Amino acid sequence: MSTSPSVAVITGASSGIGAVYAERFAARGYDLLLVARREDRLRELASKLEALHGISVQTLPADLADESGIQAVEEALRSNERIEILVNNAGTAHIAPFTAGSAELHQADIMLNITALTRLSLAALARFQAQDSGTIINVASVVSLHARAGSAVYSGTKGYVLNFTRALQEEVAGSNVRVQAMLPAITATEIWDVSGVSMEDLPPAAIMTGENLVDAALVGLDKGEAVTIPALHDLTLWETYEKARLAIFESCLTGVPAPRYQEK
Ligand SMILES: NC(=O)C1=CN([C@@H]2O[C@H](COP(=O)(O)OP(=O)(O)OC[C@H]3O[C@@H](n4cnc5c(N)ncnc54)[C@H](OP(=O)(O)O)[C@@H]3O)[C@@H](O)[C@H]2O)C=CC1
Ligand SMILES: N[C@@H](C=O)C(=O)O
Image (tube, protein in one colour):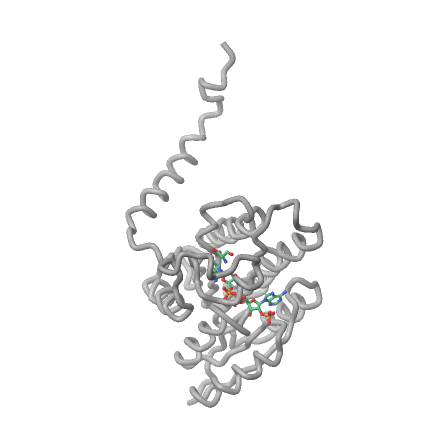
């Protein structure tokens, strides 16, 4: 008996990290649903992957900073029972002082990086939980853990992605549904053209290729990691950070202000 292949949905597949995820899931035999605004790029990638891997690829041009674009992808996630993977990868960055950006620009970045990711996770997870299978990969950033001048909105949105993903992981614990947070560091993609920071101004040795990033991220996924940070070599740093984070939370369950805040 032949069964149709599962489908991987990848947002932001028209370039960079998303295009590599598309290639890698195609190589794993998944059919694809590719989402982004630039339809010509999506179609070109779709034709290439269909020819290379003998899979079927659908394209869905959508602006995920726009309500109608989000709704179109939600509808696809709810209606296609073959969807087993959602890669919430589409994202943008504008690196500049906060007050130099308009309310509209910040709102659009939050809509894409937070609102779309949240809504698409909801649409996918409801079905994944009902069928007790499925995987969501949320692309965060190392700036989920760090913020610098110029990245107030961007790192704020990526901090959300990490905490949001952690909470979902607790909700699906014990089931066959997986939710991974993937935290790239500097990666050679078009995001730098958009962000206002030239890649030429970044330390060359710190720049990873999209291919190396996604291949490592998939090793992390296959190992069952909850949070994957491909560029982090010294894992003890992460383990120490996690231990401290949990210890701070537990240590705050005191009900009384710490002595340093009590007036003499
Ligand atoms: N490159 C890096 O150094 C790092 C990247 N990341 C994260 O990786 C993810 C992928 O980015 P990356 O590959 O680097 O950058 P790219 O700019 O190459 O890719 C971004 C993708 O998102 C899509 N996208 C952008 N805006 C919208 C929108 N409004 N609606 C729908 N799709 C949109 C773009 O397609 P289109 O323009 O056709 O719509 C494109 O496919 C992002 O979430 C980013 O924050 C995290 C850490 C580091
Ligand atoms: N995309 C990068 C910043 O613009 C990052 O997340 O480090």
